Image (cartoon, rainbow, N blue to C red; front, side, top):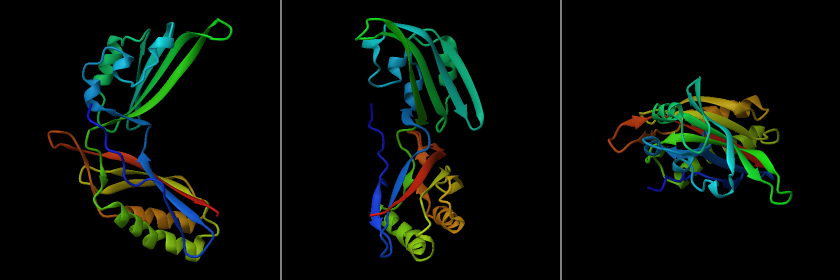
Length: 230
C-alpha cells in the first residue's frame, strides 16, 4: 500500500516575544486515523481495513458496528463477526473522501490471569482519505514564519499573558481555499481567538486533496495552538 502523506506542520515550538512562553502548533486530520478510499472497494473482513488487527487473541464476537458520518448525517450497519455483513459492505462502499468511519468491535477474549472469557471492545475512528491529501503550498519554514509574524508576536505584545491555547476546525475546499474555520476550544481570550481565526483564514491557498484521476476533494483539519510556560 502506498504510504500516506505525513503532514509537515507538526509540533513547531518557539519562544514568543521575550516572554516566558513556548507556543507549539500542531496540524492534524480532523477525525482519527487515515483510511484510504481504495481499501473500501471490496473488503471482506475487518482485517482488510485495519492494520495490526488482533485476531490472534480474539476468541469470539458479541457484535460489530460500523458507523459512517457524512456531514451531519450518520448511518450504521451491524455485523456478528470479523467477516463484514452485506449491510456493512454496502455502507463502506458509500463512503466518500473526508467522511468519518467508526468501528466498534465487541469481542470475547480469555483473561490471561483468570482464564475467564471477558467481553472487550475495539473503538477506532478513521477519516477516509485519498493518497494525495491536502497540504500547505509553502514550505514548513514559510508557514511557520507566517504564523509567527501574523499571530504569535501580536499575541505576545497584547494578549500573551492570558492566552492558554486554542483549537480550530477548518476545511480545505477542492480549490485549496481554507473555509468553515470555527473554534472547537477557545483560548479564553476573545482577541486571541479572533486573531488566530483571521490568520488561518487569510493563509495562502493549499494544494487540495485529489485522487489518481485528478479529481479534487475537500478535507478537514484541526489546528491546535498550545501555550506553556518555560
